[in-house]
Length: 113
Image (cartoon, rainbow, N blue to C red; front, side):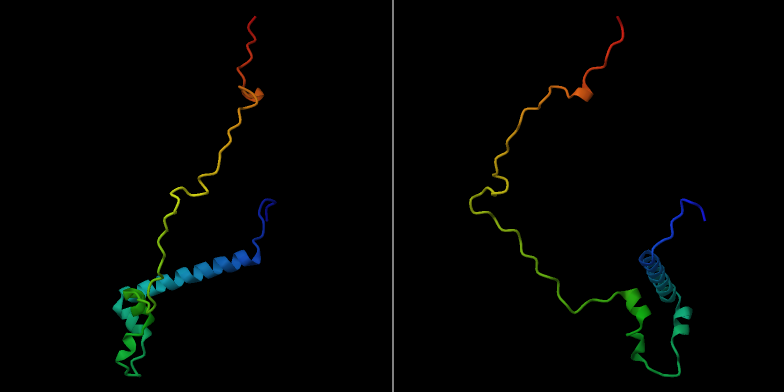
């Protein structure tokens, strides 16, 4: 182990493992959705359920799922009665700078005679 390598903390490792697992799940669902032979291997044909294909996670992943909940209603912004917002109506006081050129930004020093 080198002196510059730091061990990763436990929450960071768990986050990486979870992210890898989620990526593997999406990859597996994509493969099962694209290949009918691989998809058929997931289902056991002994049960004989014809409607089980509709509730299959692979089919739902491939076709998408629409939620029963409607979209959240967002209220539009309201107009200000006076026409000018009190936030923008605050006075801005400008102060003249202390130096014309700050000391570290002055003209270069000439070493010629």
